[in-house]
Image 1: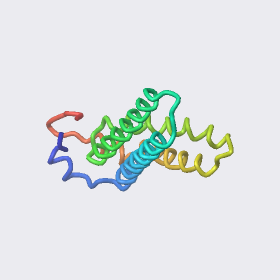
Image 2 (image 1 turned 60 degrees about the vertical axis):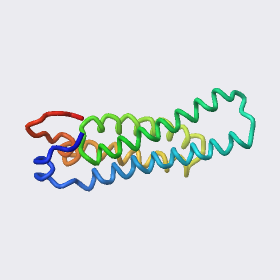
Image 3 (image 1 turned 90 degrees about the vertical axis):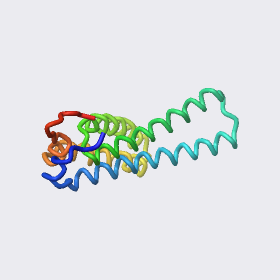
Image 4 (image 1 turned 180 degrees about the horizontal axis):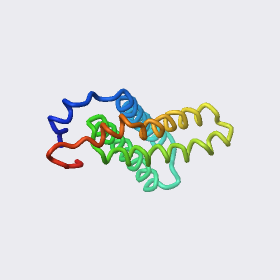
Length: 141
């Protein structure tokens, strides 16, 4: 699962890759914060459905861990991470637009601006080149 040795020596890691990885990890940490807040509220109030609440908590933590994995492997240059990052940022935009329309401007912008930046940077030549490098071994993972 490590990056091929000779391809890493040919090209330095682009700054956009570092920025995208940082945004993905930040979003994952924010989700873990939401999970902590969710647990706090589970202990201080009675949910309508405890099973549903626990399942929701499990999904939040699962997505946060997945984002940490995607951010890590994107930093290392794995090509499958571009699709994962793209899909997550599209979900963020889908959440941000109704939030903005609902009048919660600050939260909507906090969701929208990093997602838009990542979407734009994902399709730049240095990022595509970094995540498409191959050597004699053409493994994608």
